[in-house]
Structures are given as structure tokens and as C-alpha cells.
Image 1 (cartoon, rainbow, N blue to C red):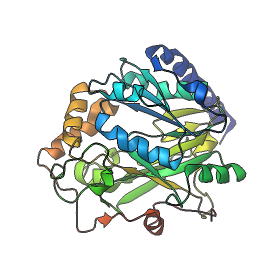
Image 2 (spheres, rainbow, N blue to C red; image 1 turned 90 degrees about the vertical axis):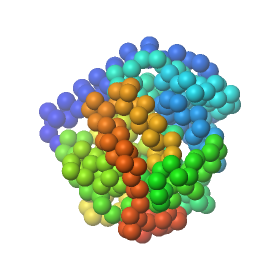
Image 3 (cartoon, rainbow, N blue to C red; image 1 turned 90 degrees about the horizontal axis):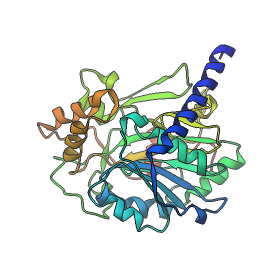
Image 4 (cartoon, rainbow, N blue to C red; image 1 turned 45 degrees about the vertical axis):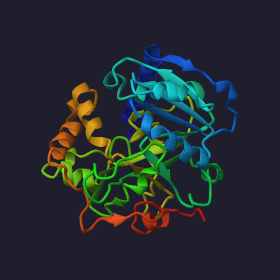
Length: 336
């Protein structure tokens, strides 16, 4: 990378941090339990709206995996989400009634909270329907992974978003509070993915899977990106640029081996496609608070009009992380 482009990226990073500083005024602290955070705690950061039914399993999953404290930004929920979060002993909660779109889809809010609270901590940024899978996650907590990353001087860890879905109509098997969503959404696409490298930021750009084939069949380049960098050893100079797809400084995006080897990586199992999805898609379409004039949710609404079954004869039933490694969707690298 030339000196001029490097200089421009440094200026861009400063601009995102300044923007996050300004956007902090859009948030009001509801419950602040940050005094309970220990220096080595693993932190989680999430923005959400009307996700009450998902929260019990979300917290159960990540507490068992070793997350110590949750930072949550509630964007004007009216289904009991905020009240539930207030009661959780390991949650610090902020609320905002400002535009999700104008906060760069929550990135500005979380960049500020990470700037203020995450310095020196491993920070996991996930949505409430994303479940972090990594090598040996069935026997080792996240701290085992972060200890290895620290020992290897690795500051960021990549994960591919894997869309999970049921066999049959989405509304055939209702999701109940506290249930493991993957008891319903058991299947995923093992192929049908395209990967290219972003020349400016250096990150990989991955698209495909069921959302591409079912909702963007005529325009696959418009399908959602599946590349994520959710786990980062945070410093005040860091900033997410676009969701968790890429960060600055640019070196944090190099979560893959440029020379043909394999770096350790994970997956985020995405439990979007449950019976709750149709109502959620219609709500977000009405709110028009998502990227590109909510083009993604327009595609969902159009596709769901016929109640599609996302399952195909090529769908793979999820077993465990080793299956994902064999299929090339994640790697344990040299972590043994």
C-alpha cells in the first residue's frame, strides 16, 4: 500500500472515532455495571431492537462460552427487551431513540462504547441471532482461544457468517423463548460461496448461501456480506468501518493467510430464519432503517410472499465445528 493511501486510511479512522464521539449523545445509560468489569474480562457488544424472545438463549450460550460482561444498546424496543436487559446482572445497558441508519447501523454507538470501555479487553461484537463457533468450542471456552491468540500475538479473529434454516416453511415450527434455535434451524449451505479480496481494506468479501440463492438469484452481488471479524483485542485507536465486516487499522482485517496456508478462523451460526422472521422483515421494511434503502428487507419481503422453503437436496445438516472445518468454512490453523 502506498503512503498516500495509508495516510487517507488514518484520516478515515480518525473521522470514524470523532463521529463516534459525537454520536455518544444519542445514547442514554440505563444501567451501568462497568465497575464490576475485571481487567481480563471478555466483553460482548450488541445493538438490538425488539428481540425479547431471543435473549434468554443468547445469554445462556455466551455465558457458558465465557463472556463476562455484555454491553447492549437498545434502539427503542417496545416488546419488553429493555426491561429484561435491565434485570441481567452482567449487562450494562444504553438506550437510543435516534436513527439506526444515521448511526451507521449501530456502528457509531458501539465504536464509542468500545473506545471508552474495551481498551485492553478481548471484545466480541455480535447480533443476538449470531452464535460464535470456533475450533474446539465444544470443549474449550472463548478464553482458551483468546489466551492462544495473545500468545501468538494475534489481535483479531475472523468468522464466516453461516445462515441456518429449517427444513420446510419457516412458520411450521414456532420458536419458544429459551430454546436452542438450531433445534429448528438445523441446515446450512455447504457450498455456493464466492470470495474476493477488498483492495482498499485488505479484508475478504464473502457472499452466497441461502440468502443469495433464494432472495438475490438475479443479482447475487447484492446479497449480504458473510465475512466478519467479531473478536478483537481492542485498543482506543481501533474502529469498525462497516458492521463487523472490516476495521481500521487495516492490518486487523488480515485474518487469513496471504501465502496459501491456513489461519485459525471461526463461524457465526446465524439464526435469522425462524418463524419470527417474516414479522421482523415486515417491521424493518416499514421502518426503512437498513442499508441501501432496506433493499435487503425488500428482497426478503418479496421472497417470503410465497413462503419459500430454503431447504434443498444439497442442504447440509449441522453437526459440529469439525464438520465446518472439513467443509472449509473455518479452520483451526496451528491451534491444536
